[in-house]
Length: 63
Figure 1 (cartoon, rainbow, N blue to C red):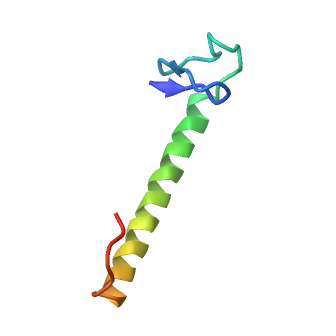
Figure 2 (figure 1 turned 90 degrees about the vertical axis):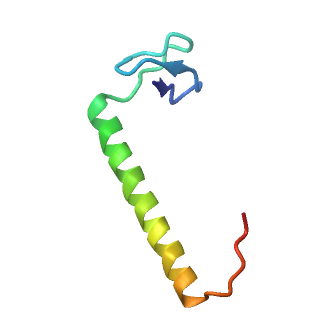
């Protein structure tokens, strides 16, 4: 399931136009590229957190 980039309503994958606001949705190629970029960003974030924990083992976690 995906969400409309304009109004945020949920749609099945492959929807070209939002049935609520009529806004055109991004194509599958763009969505796949954005998913890959999001995974890369998440990986970098986790690496940075691990490095910070390594540099300061007494740092308190802020959860």
